[in-house]
Length: 203
Length: 77
Image (cartoon, rainbow over all chains, first blue to last red):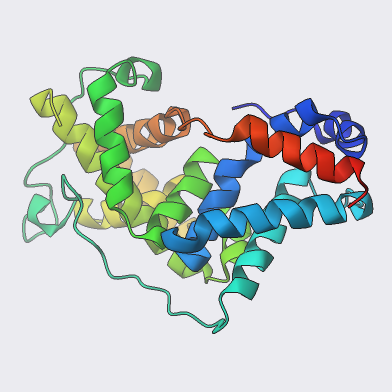
């Protein structure tokens, strides 16, 4: 997904150009949904995103360009979600939900900390080659869907939307150490799914 | 000396540039002598690349939403 440059998009948005809004939504709505998911959960996320879009249009004329459009959109989304969440202080759940193919956990190591079951070589060594397999793509989506709302969102924002950990912390009001733990655990689960698929050829 | 288990625990921080110098050196020293962990880190990088490139589901109401937002903008909402 390559987003058009802000400077090119902004005048067209201000003029009410429908194609420009189409590019804006296509480029950033997934990231906005991930932010909303993390804060209000899956049930209310879509409504929050809708409300955020309305707030975006209301405030577009006042956008100063001090941050990127992306950061601005995500901040509006986070604020909309937090307003929605009346009792603002939620607990950050670090409890791990089991994932379809597990994780890289203690069972992989001997008592002395050496690998007991070390990773094998994979058949493919490029993302393009791996992702040609429809079944693997579906399998990965299943694993991603098994993550908690917050864990899945942190991973999505970090890997798919390319946000820095610090940005994620600011948007979601979580500590850096929590963000690190959440994204690390999520990555290991995705790793385990890829490994399982590479070893067995199916999900 | 870092164990393999500890290396795995530090792996995301290593890849995200979140380790302090001392831990970063410990990770690099371990990697220099451990084939299994080198492979693990390579596969972690690949895992990240796969997630980055995983196609996203299309937005179902993209055109109608874009139309609605453009109209609101034109009305000077």
